[in-house]
Length: 497
Ligand SMILES: *Cc1c(COP(=O)(O)O)cnc(C)c1O
Image (cartoon, rainbow, N blue to C red; front, side, top):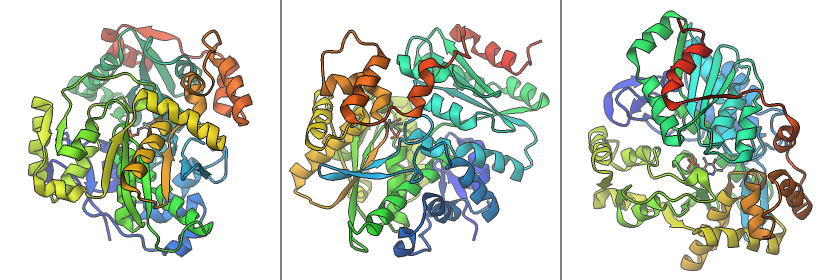
């Protein structure tokens, strides 16, 4: 049976999974959602014996129903291979009172790799399926993590090019080095003199340029997006929650059918929504614990039912969670509105007009699966030190927020349900903040000196992704004014007259 996708803002048109992946965002600004969330058709006991790749197939085949078995298995095999530094792909590590699901063993040592290693294959397969002849040009603005993961995913993938814009003075030294050393004949990295918002608006403007779209088409190109609202990023993220449950079962840590909690450090609401989908597919999950940093717009939402972005944007040591509009929340709003696209569209319209909306008590009553809380900068740093002292395990700054929120949840509720915490980045990606937490006083050290000190303290080998950039040559050094972004694209595609 074919599963179709519709916009959260308009029920009229339905598209196939491959079309939803190619389009990214629906034409009306809504997000694509499946008509229903399919139930797993293989037993948990059977899943317990499966590899990551086999689990991925069992989950993804139910969502991407217009992909053939051969196509999907090929995408999975190409994505989850030696790029990951462990054959388990997403290993579980017990430390202190929880299981940390390590989602950072891919090419760029952050959880974005879990979906961005497969998205390029899904997208090129989808293009073939839909007789798209154009070369696909992925255009991305980044504040650090997404850009590198997308570059690594799309590098040398036939039929695609990727152009990443980043704020020249707005990313960490390690993040910049990771991007400007990116290999691949189809990768382009361009610094801009503006900030991240300028990069983001510039990209949106290029996407919306009708004349450019026609010229691109004539030259054999079309734009697409690797943004986290693409269903091709959401579906692969469901896999590791199914896998984690199956591995707990296989290891005798839980009884068949025993419920677990899941805690997720949240920004754009993509990762935790994937956990919610895993629950609806039949994985016994009790609570979805949504962890925020000081940008706690979601905490307030779960407590009051009012989503209000009118507040100060706070820069924290967990930058990938510094976000005031959690785009993927729209998919949950649509669901609790009883799949009422009109109702959802009205709320989203209010959000863009007033920066605020409020859900009804009836909708609020459907949020019982969720618990929201946050950790301050100091609490997150204390958590890194605490877990290191108690268990010898080093958390990154984002995972520390989740870990601290889980601690608060336990203290508040007394709930002893076994809990998986999504561990979204390697501590090596945020070495300075991590070192400040466990061994302060290294202000004079370079980032790479801190990397070596962290390795000595943690006993964990420096990841390949960091070793590589230590000595890698800079391959991208273009910097343009914000106004020059379109010209940069034309020049890269050799379309400038
Ligand atoms: C992107 C990111 C997050 C937030 O994930 P969402 O899906 O946007 O909620 C958390 N931690 C890290 C390290 C990330 O890169």
